[in-house]
Image (cartoon, rainbow, N blue to C red):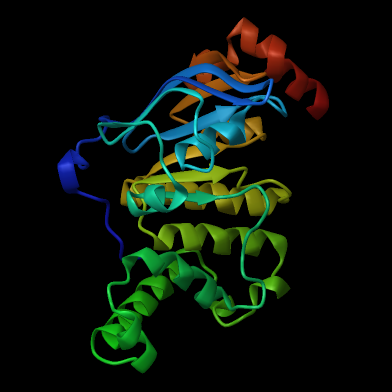
Length: 273
C-alpha cells in the first residue's frame, strides 16, 4: 500500500488532538442515546469505545461522521469546532467508516468495490469521464494502481476480480476495510470490524488494524465487543453505559475500574465462562 501518513498541519507530530468530543448529547424523542459524553482522540492512537448493547457506541460514531447531529455539545475535528457535519463533508475532511453490517456492492468485484473509495479523490469532469480521455484516463490508472496496492496489503490478491457477494464473510470484512483505506483517511472509524468472525479471521483483522496504525500513522476509533482484542489493540478506551461515560483510560486502568467491571466487564467474563 503506497499511501503515506497525512503530513499536513502538524500531522506528523504524534500525540496531538485530532478529535475532541465535549458534552455531546443525542436524543430521539424522549429517548436519550447519549448524555454529556466527552473524550479526546489523539493522532495515531487506536482508541476503543466499548460498552453493553444499547450503550450508545454506534450513535457516537454516527455523530462523529455526520449521520446524526448532536442535540447538544461540540465535536472538534482538527482544531475546528463544528456544530453540524454531513457524511459527505466528513469524508472529504478525512473521516472514513466501516459498519456493523457489511455494506458492499455484492455484484461488483473486490477491486471495483475498493475503487469506490477513491470517488472523492477524482478531479476529472463528467465529459472527460464519459469520453475517458486525458485527465480521466490518467486518474483511472492512478486510482486502480493505488487500489491494487491496498489489495496486496490486505492479502486478497487472488480475489481482486471475484464478486464480493461470493466471498466468505471474513474476506468481505477485509474488502470493506480496503474501501475505507482507499479514501486515505486521517481518522478511520471501525464499527465492530470483527463481529461474526472466527478466531483466525479475528487474528488477521487485528494484524491489519495494527499495521494500518503503525505503518501509515492512521488514527483509529474502534467499537468492538471482544475484550481480548480491545485490550491488546487499544492505546486508550472509553466505556459507555446507557448513553453515559462511566470510565476512560488505558486498558489496564479500564480493566481495573470497579464501575466498568460492574456494568460491563463482569458480564463479559460471565458470558465467556
